[in-house]
Length: 113
Length: 110
Image 1 (cartoon, rainbow over the protein chains, first blue to last red):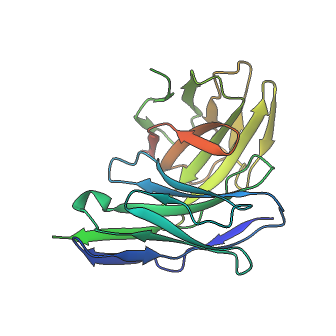
Image 2: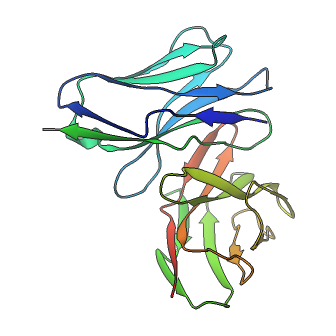
């Protein structure tokens, strides 16, 4: 069974600063993917970044990057140069071969002007 | 435009009534999912379907039912057996590892 833990229910960051959201997971799959999704106040789920577990290189997508530690089963999200539009709930989600996405409880991020 | 459409956006149900939430996708995805979202609990999987005419229970299937008669459609029925149905419901579809989400339906029991 897969489990996901996001230990930071709420975080805040000043505009233009950097913030890191943490996620740990457990999975019995050998080949899997990891995702960060963002849910702004509109409640539309938006893919932020994905990481293939077989790749050692950390994924980067503009201001968003991950720190993937496979042995530790850790998958943190770093947001650089935070913008007001980054204010949202952020969900970590591993995906294995079972066609099920298991989501963490989320981290509510507020970017302060 | 390709995407996932959930309707209605807001739905009100009287206690003891069944209600059906619609989810349609034109992305030609095989897999579809229903999630429930409550404050502080993230997204919990209700049902998922990997292929037409087949579906599996997720973690909180009690009080819900689904059908998958067509590839593009995966309706969710909230039955009177669901004791606390007030929540936000999200439908998703995928081909491979990436999921695409609808805009959700807010169900309120009155």
